[in-house]
Length: 320
Image 1 (tube, rainbow, N blue to C red):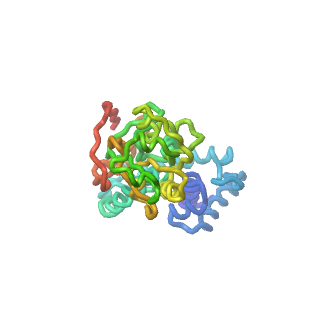
Image 2: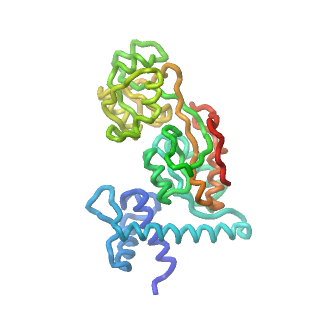
Image 3: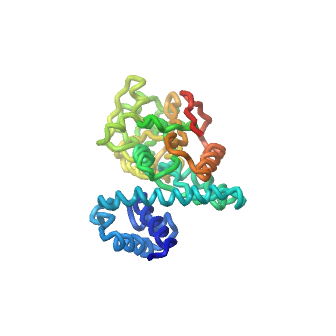
């Protein structure tokens, strides 16, 4: 019989590969060496007698056997977390592992301060950060890959079971090359003037859901049509595309703040349209005590610089 502790370590490494999409990223997220992660996955594959990943694809993808094991591995680790959390009153604090999802600009501007504070206040809670584009975060929650996640509230989550608490609002901004004709236009830059140029936006060009993002909707609401020439979920990529003359960028303030903006100008957009950001979770799935503590820490943490308080548009369905 194999050592149970070793099996749990195998599960942690295996699920890290599932959540990050690569063995290298899994090693970074678990603070293990890449060969160590590979050994754990290989040991599981030997035990099961089936490959768990299709390694020819990038990012690596689960096989049918791997998908079945991922569900059970998460159940095992969550059961262990619940058992540890139940002992918290006798151990002097909350313990457990919490998977926190985030998108690039929030990860850069908000998450580091949050994790630093939690390291001091709740050292027995391990937060596993998982980064995805907004719509991929919805899928990760539905698949059980994350417990909580930070998310722009436009477009709204598809699942009615997702509940949220507002965190902040941030203005949308215009990003253009320093020598662009928009340099002669005074602040704030009128939407109609921006719409006359090719636009680089947030999202993915071939995804119909991208049209629901704020950078599209604010123009539509003013009767304007923009012509996106490229889209990305990475702030630095958007800035680089703009700096190379691909188009004029329309993005959220934190995306511009977190990127190296040398060679471009970041300008206020007329009407100060805002992106609302919230922390979300699934009301049909009970949060562990550790996850509840992280939810509390997220909602109480200082807002990132340059953002504003926000209000709930609809009554929150808080299932705590």
